[in-house]
Length: 443
Ligand SMILES: Cc1cc2nc3c(=O)[nH]c(=O)nc-3n(C[C@H](O)[C@H](O)[C@H](O)COP(=O)(O)OP(=O)(O)OC[C@H]3O[C@@H](n4cnc5c(N)ncnc54)[C@H](O)[C@@H]3O)c2cc1C
Image (tube, rainbow, N blue to C red; front, side, top):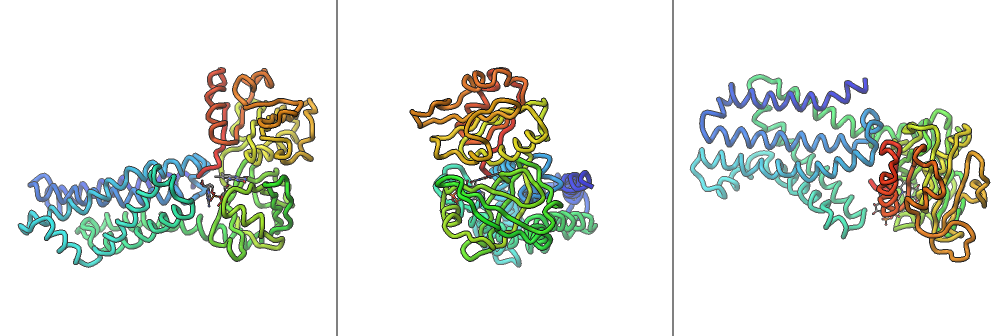
């Protein structure tokens, strides 16, 4: 079934492009090789088709579809979405001028006069507004503009792109030349692709989390402060033993209380699943998390979208593990290590923090490195009096602490600069790439 879903969109997109070629080189439009006017129109249509296919593909990439996400991981799919978002607008921008140019050549109007005429055609003005909204969303996602925006402002602009897409549907269905071709194969293909995209978005982004809530009735049971700025949220629910989570995964949490309902934020499960409760450990960082620390009450319902992610023990190539956590990056690693140690796996957890008071889960992990199969080594960067390991982690210090690291799978989660340095350092020490796994707290 998964394979059918995976093939559906590429096969549908390829069919649409073949049908474009057929429609534009034979009946009913005549050969687009015949003259310049036909050629311009054919490429105008092609730009429109490619842009719309691109936007549908983009929506599938961020649909959180269960047939797609486990193959790549949500973070990588989101990265593909960002990259493709820089290319697809080129087709979107090329479509109107090519089509207007074609009509201007036919009527003898100037380009501007023709453009204003076309704008008055049915469905064109909403489509033009839709295109504008999509281009604004793309512009605000470029690295130099994105850096200057809050997540919420950027996210709102992105929602504008959805509206933009909705505004363009009338034009796609009503005016799209290929849709009206004598043979209706193109229209059938297009309706199938649109329905497939809409169904995936609707189910995975909206209905599935609601269905999971209806089934499990997730509710905040209690909150526990782990340090001055990290709070664990324990969540109870019905039949949690059937809510399948792999340690290392994360979920998007929407707390159903005034002031929180409109935002879903990603957090890693910080405890291996036990069928009784779920735990997320949340660091105060910005507006949402600060407010959550201050206002979240036991009894608050939680809509959970997940689990997501492929940062799990299933990736292991060896039978020994090295976990390297920086600060709040401990959350997914704690869950993976918990399961791994329970199965008597050989692991070392290296947990870097600024100072002793920032270390979370101390009561679970133990104050000191107890040796044995499940070691924990604390490394502090800003505590001169700490008798244990001090300073920033690098590949050399990892090698000193874990001499057999090349025989282990390494799982990294922490601040991006730390992970980048360790990834390249480990590769420099000859650790095979497929033994280095990392999770970024970035979507
Ligand atoms: C896969 C993953 C797992 C994570 N696990 C944990 C965890 O276990 N514990 C923890 O404390 N934090 C975790 N985070 C980070 C957490 O999601 C952010 O710290 C939190 O959303 C910040 O929200 P804010 O409004 O308080 O801060 P802001 O200052 O508004 O945001 C800080 C950064 O967080 C990201 N962010 C903010 N809102 C969202 C959102 N709705 N969706 C996606 N990203 C967002 C953006 O990159 C933003 O720049 C995880 C993130 C990801 C992607």
